[in-house]
Structure formats: structure tokens, C-alpha cells
Amino acid sequence: MSDWLQQARRRALQYWAEDGLPDLYTGALLLLFVGLQAGGERLFPAAWRGAEQGVALVVLVLGTLLARPVLRALKQRITYPRTGYVAYRTPSLAEQRQGLFFTVGLAVVLLALAVLTPDWPTPAALWLTHGVFFAITAALAARLGLPRYWGYATLLLLAAGFYTLTWETWPTAWHDALAAGLPTLALLGLVMLLSGAWTLARYLQRHPVWSGEAES
Amino acid sequence: MSTAPLGPPPVDPLIHAPARLSIMATLAAVEEADFRYLLHTTGLTKGNLSAHLSKLEAGGYVAITKTFRGKVPLTLCRLTPQGRAAFERYRQQMMAYLQAAGPEGPSPDTTPKEVAP
Image (cartoon, rainbow over all chains, first blue to last red; front, side, top):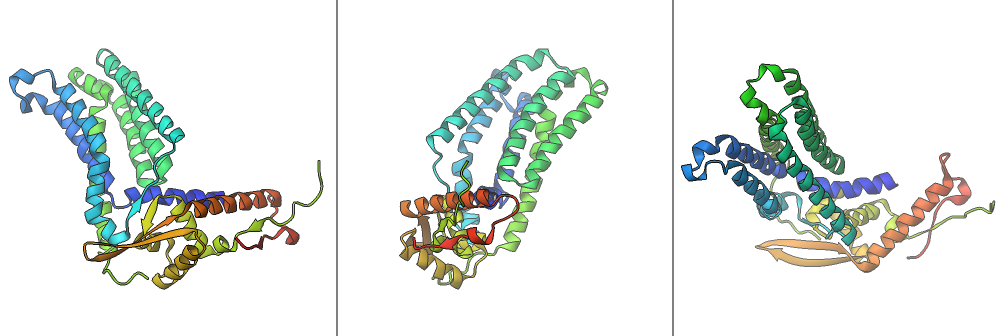
């Protein structure tokens, strides 16, 4: 009974990711973040040199804050006319407090990593950053119960293993980026983009637009 | 420790029917949802869903608002505070019943009986 009710609750959460739009958005955002960090030198004017990391971080934060309204606008055009509209419950105060603690904790960990990793480009630092990424993705996968999110989490572990095993073969100039997890984020972004596109294509194929027949 | 039988827990018949339980559980997880979402999630037919929603509305458990998005009719459904409370009560009763039944399953004299909501 409790399992069944849990499943009913989870079903509502899964609906948010059923169309693949969140994967597409997150994938694009991750690629943009890594692209700005890696290609910033060529993209920005000379006066902005050195500010690539800051700009990329601002883009990442803004993109995260805008995710909900942007996705909702997209869903209004794509998802709701096909499989229906749903408004999620406002989180309770306890849930909001929990979310705030989690976000602040995560920000502290990421800041600590940003400070530590440039001077600590070792496989240990690589595992630290990848561990954080894995924890976030696995928490999301456990909450949603969607296999493809477990796939994303597994990809992070596989990438960490691969880069550790091949650490010595990479040029030293790459060690900072590897420890910071940039190639892994780019790979994850690409995989999410492709997986999101495939999920969306399948969703559109399976759910034509509602004909607007009488409902009751 | 008391050895007196727990007895059958009262179960709300308006919620206890599988189709309505499915609707109530779906709506309990969200703020509101439209008819299409309920169709998509519960797997009921239009007629079936419509009939069960009408019963839940008549019982005061579900509030239904009919509106339009553009030219398309939109039927928004949400649990009323009474419906939310009834569903929570039902959930707790069933959990208590299942706990009392233990891993071997319910005995015939503890089978839940339907009572008026």
C-alpha cells in the first residue's frame, strides 16, 4: 500500500521529465558552461580575459534559476496539449528548509572544490569533484526513479574511472580541467542532450495532440 | 500486552474503489491536474474517469473547474481540503490494517468493511 502510494507520488514527479525537455535543457546548459570555460579566450574580448570562469558560473546559476519558468513555457506548448497539465504542490516549510540547507551545503562544497582543485590536480581531486556530481545525479535519480538518470550517474563514475586510469597519458595542462570535471560535464551534457532529444521524439510519436473532444 | 483483536478498520467506500483510489492518489500528489493528465496517469477510459470524478465531486472530495485554454476545453481537478483529509485518513487506516495483519496477510475477521464517508 505504502509502496503503491509512493509510486503514485513519484509518478507525478516523473511526469516532469517524461518529455525529455529537462534533459535537453540541462544538457544544453552544461555544454554552454563548459564551452564558456574552455573557449572563453576566443569568445570574449581581450579586456575580459581571465573572467571566463566567473562568466561561466554566472551563466550556470542564471540558467539554473531560469530552468523552471523556461521549461514550464515549453511544456505549455509541447506537453500539456498532449498528456495534460499538472500543477505541483508548493513545498511545505520543512521541505523548503531542507532544500535551502541542501543548496547552501552544495554551494559550500562546490566553492571549496573550486578553491582546492586548481592547486590539487590529482586523481584524488578528480574523484572528489566526480563524487559530488555523482551524489547530485544519484539523488535526483533516486527521487525520480527514472533509469536514464541512473545511467547519467553511472556515466560519471565510469568517466572518473577512465580518467584515473589514463591520468598519466594526459598532458599536464589538462590535469586541472580533468580534476575540475570539465570533460566529464561536457560528456554528460552531450549525453543528456542526445537522450533528451530521443525521449522527446519518442514522446511526440506516442502522444499526439489532444483532439479537444468532450471531456465529460 | 492486549490480545484483543484489532477489529476491522473503517474504510471510506468513496475512496476504496480502485479507480477512485487511483484518482485520489494522483491528485493527492499534486496541487491540481487536468482531465487529460488524469486519463494519462490512471489509464481509465474517458467515460469511466468522468463518472468517478463526478462521484468524488458529489462527495465533496474533488473540486472541478471547467474552463477553456484558447478554444480547447480544460477541466481542472483538485482535492478539496475535505478530500485531502479523507485520503490521509484512509491511508492511515489501511496502513494500520496492513500492519495489524502482519506478513501472513489478513485473517477473514479483519477484512476491512466499507463504512459511509
